[in-house]
Image (cartoon, rainbow, N blue to C red; front, side):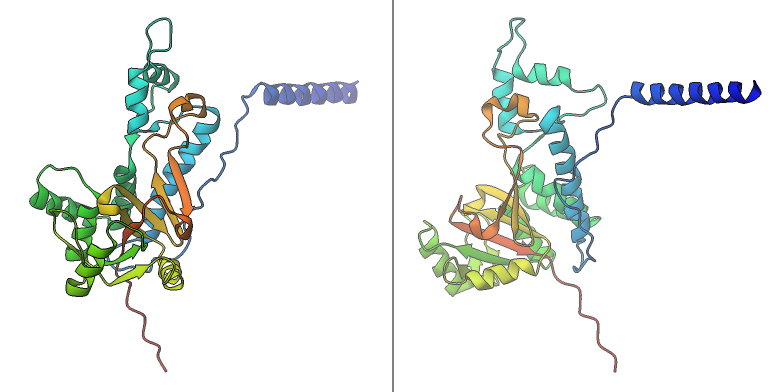
Length: 288
């Protein structure tokens, strides 16, 4: 009898465990959409793995929520459209509907290209970000950060090196060529010019461009006088699309998600680009 009782008790416990397991909500495994950096930092005054991983954290959180839920990240232009559109019978805007879907603990955050790139730069510069912010305010007051303004400060005060990558058909080509030959600078309209290490032409210097990118885990870049800001991770150009929705469900105004990645050599949205790289750490001397 004792053995039979223990047997029945064991079966009951087993069934209870199975029942409890079934009652637990399924925890979906988070996917890694953007790989994290695991390499050793190679820069002086800038920590590229920190910069890359700050972006990877944001992108992974966004895409895991975007596919089947609602992310707290969204594009600034998407928000403008969503606020102005009232598709619901109770006069609820698209944006108000979105806000109701978010948990109370979520903090919605609007992003555009420069805000996105700044998150990487701030993480990589660490304490240097405070100095850069002070320099920016001293130079331009409360004016918003731009790709060209950050590039200028990085080159002048943080020893970053800038390269102009341009296509022959760019509207800027002749002016940029003249400015580089005479002053080795990229001319920004009514703003300080950016010192250049080289002017590289797409189609002619592709091998040199590809090598330069492959040697740098992080680059700060902008296109055509600062119309667009982006970063590079080795040979990939990474950008934030300001029309990106926080959810696939809410993508009526969006032809793409918030974050995009394109091989730099396949990127043709603009015909001229300036890209800046941090100074490399000194190569350790080889002892005999």
